[in-house]
Every structure is written in C-alpha cells, then in structure tokens.
Length: 375
Image 1 (cartoon, rainbow, N blue to C red):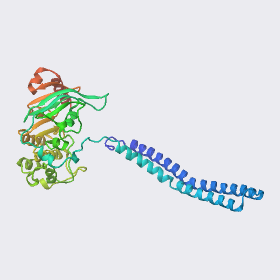
Image 2: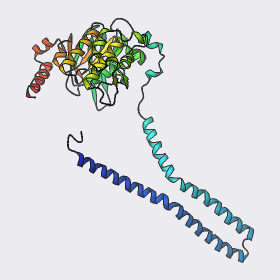
Image 3: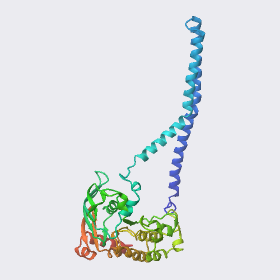
Image 4: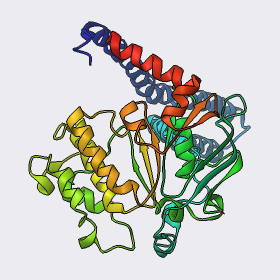
C-alpha cells in the first residue's frame, strides 16, 4: 500500500522522527544511568572526608573516642554501599515499571463473564439438535457505552429453516446483531431466544456449537485445506465423517490440489475468493443448525460466487440462516429481508414487496444500482 500510494518519503520521514525520538530517549537514559554511580561515589567520598575532619577535631577535643569515630566511619561506608547498588539497577527498575504498566493494561481488558473454554466439552454435544431453531430478537437494545446506542428495540423473527437477509447502511448495527447472536456481546436489555430458550441462560459453548459463520474476511489456519475443513467438525461428530458432504468436494475442487492444498492465514497462498470457498466448506462440515453469512461473497468473482451459492444452498434447507449482504443476487434467494436503520428494523418482507413499497430498501437498492452504473 505504501508503494501503491507513493508514500515512501512520508513513511521514511515518520520513521526518521520516531528514530530520532528513540535516539534522544536512549542517550538521556544512558547519560543518567552512567552518571549516577560516579556522582554517588563522589558524594560518598565527600561525606567520608567531612566525617573524618569533623571526627578528628572532636577527637582532639576529647568529645569522642577513637573507637566511636572508627565505628561512625564504618557505618557510613556500609550505608553507602547498598545505595550504590540500588542506583546500578535503576535502569532495570525503570524497564520493569514499563512492563508492569503494559501487563496492567492487558489485564484491564474486559473478559467474557463465562468463557466458552471453561465450559465442559460434553455441553457442545448436548446442546445440538437436529432441527433448525426459530430465533427471536425481542426488544433488543445494545450500546457500547451510554453515549453510543447501536441497537434500539430490535424485534425480529427468523423462522425455523428459513433464510432471512439483513440489509442496512454502514453503522446501522448489522454486525453488532450477528455478534449478539454468537454471544460475543450480550444485549443491554431484551432477549434473544432459540425455540423459546433465552441464549443468555445457556453456556457460550452450547450457543456457539449450534452456529457456523462465514465472514467477509475469510480466516483460515496454516495447514492443508482438508485440515481446515475438519476443524469445522462438531464435537459430537466423528472427524472422519466430518467432510463426507459431496458439496465439500465441489467447493474444494476449485483449489490447486483439492484437499491437499497448502494454506496459510497470513500469506498469499490462496486468493480471497479461494479462502472464501474454504470457509464455506468448513461451514458445511460443521453441519450447523444456524448459519450466519456476513458478506460471505464480497470477495468472490461471479464464478466463485455461483459455486459458493450452491454450497450454501446445500445448507439452507436444514438451517436457520441469517445473511448480511448488499448484493441483490444474494438477497433474491432469501425468504425475507429485514432492513435495519439507526438500530431499528424499519422494514420486513420479500425483495419484490419491499421494492414495490418504495421505502428504505428501495432507496438502498436504487443507490446501489446507480453506483454500479457509474463505475
């Protein structure tokens, strides 16, 4: 990106400024740490001379004895030695305080109230049903803080075994809604239920074991494509049977070596579209009851999008699906569409009905068409 925007001089200047600050800080630190020991040694010598002169004068006056004077000088030397040792480790103490501050910052980060990793393993299997659930958002409010309400009284029903699409402008709360469904966040008020059961009353493992998620940014793990697919296998499923779905082979056929294709999350071994194919295959292997697609085809070309759509179609007949997308080709396949605006559901219906109504969805679709034509 630096090269593409011809920002090398600017970046070099920024690095130069940071490097100069580091140089000045290092020189100051070394100057102070290097001068402390000689200064203390000089002070100790001055104190010794003063005590010796005053002590000699008092000795001549008969105020102190020679033994008392000798004891005072020895105690002074014993006191100065640990002070010198403390100053010699002062740079290490400063470094330790900085590290302590970073650890405190890390520990201050919020944690989940009941981490999923602490749940018993068997809870994932016990929480899995074989029929897709009916999901209801009942008067759901959420705010990251009091000054930033994101969701304001969302009421939405996702019928069992049906596909619901969620659309809205950037910042309307779409991703927050999916995060609530995955229990990465909990509502400020209101409830989210699966078949009438409040998900806040079950463990996060039980809630998440019923989900499969395909996000806009496809995350893969270093290894082979087959290993990534097996990672999606549910806890109560034999790993050897996790990838028997024939549609998985169709999705992985687009990769160079199929299941044996080497992949890595932080390299360019796969294109964005190929990674998306892999994440959809992993979702198929999970055999979920609830499927969340967050802009799942955003990085795909038309051919890859068609393959992904076929893979997702194999899941939709046995899952309750929530799609977040702006592509009309994807919206058209949904059973219903919910329009989110300013944290509220303002419209809900089929694509044709919403277009005919001429409301918020029609405005968003019209703007998307205009932008596409201008491009």
